[in-house]
Amino acid sequence: MNKVEEYCFFRGNFVPTPEANVNIKTHALQYGTACFGGIRGYYNTQEDNIFLFKIEEHIERLYQSAKILFLQLKYTPEELKKIFIELVQHSKYKQNVYLRPFIYKSSLNLSPRLHEFDDDFFVYVIPLDDYMDIHKGLKTCISSYRRFSDNQIPTKAKATGGYLNSALTKSEALMRGYDEGIFLDIQGFVSEGSAQNIFIVKNNQIITPDVSSSILDGITRKTIIQISKDLQIPLIERKVTRTELYTADEAFFSGTGVQIAWISSIDDRAINLGKIGRITKQLQSYYLDIVTQKEKKYQQWLTPIY
Ligand code: PMP
Image (cartoon, rainbow, N blue to C red; front, side):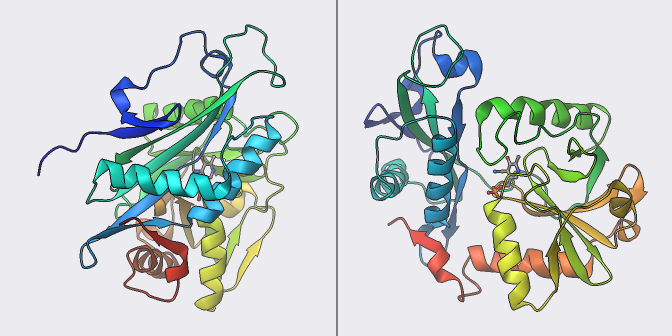
């Protein structure tokens, strides 16, 4: 297969990504004053088309993040959707892709504040299959870093600056020989992974930290809440304690990048004897069937590119 040139939408034009560069004084680069999204497009071989997953929800979250951070988006939701579709068309991909829209303080001013400074927007697209191996169980540990609370960095905004917290956790976990770290919130309750929401299963019930546990309100998390209803698996959102993780029957992560990835151990305690659990497996295959349209029930969640 010929290598496809990577394209982005930058300063109002579709340009090759290597040509899209910013000034070193850019405010967002200096202070992390930006927000972003992560959207998957799934290539369907039979239809020879790429389908973006839950594009409207991603656009809505982008708007919310921008509002919280005083970032102005100069495009309407309809215009954004059109830009995303045209970008993938322009790149001529025939494989799974990932889009990264980004709204940032483009001002070259020195002061670390959010208001009255200029903003800009770009979106790039890359090919992306599995971001983590979802068929192998993940070895996880509780992070020594706490998840920031909503009064420190707004947890509902997908803010770039907040990812320093994620990066510290991810590196700590990898450098200690684990695959992923799990954050506790400021109060000591379970929060989420470095870039994923977390779920456990206990006595055939799915449990996930509620939105007041300093989590990003993940779009995949919401999808799981919806589809577990369909599968008639009870699910509750509530505070989760560290000990509940150790004694869970099953545990898994969710996110646009990881999709549904199962956890084989937490702080060296094997979960389900280190094997994928029945409910996790059922949800994982249902989710993959939905995004690849083997399951047709949720086709309204998928937007075709070509
Ligand atoms: N939490 C964090 C911190 C994340 O970065 C992500 C990835 N966007 C998620 C949760 C999962 O969110 P989503 O399902 O919307 O991708």
